[in-house]
Amino acid sequence: MNIQSVKEDLAYVISIDGELDASSSIHLDKAIEQAVSNNEKNILIDCTNLKYISSAGLGVFMSYLQDFENTGTSMILYNMSEKVKSVFSILGLDQLIQIVRNKEEAIKTISQ
Image (cartoon, rainbow, N blue to C red; front, side, top):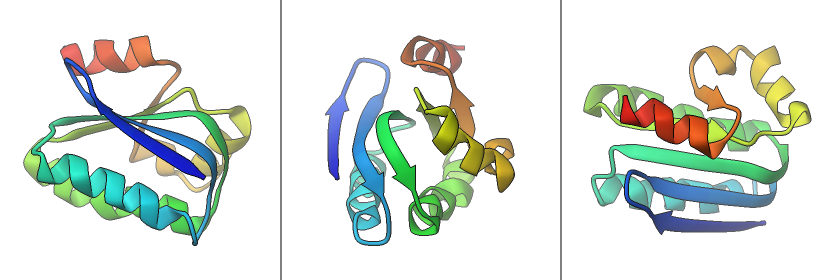
């Protein structure tokens, strides 16, 4: 599992590569926490290379939802495989977390 973060013009982009499970979810948590501590208001999560997500990985995303709502922070996931997206859908998390097809759509969403 590898996580890379980069500050771009309009957003803070976190890219996930590998499997997001109990042992690796702490790395995602730290990456999101870093964005929060930098007062980033637009956080994009690139799921292009996300192969698998466990309940611990889902929990990381869920743990920030209320804080993001309170602070007006946008978190958008994009380029998610159908396999991973179905996990979000089955649990109804696609209703709570914004998921779009690609980075262009994510940028367009935060630019509105």
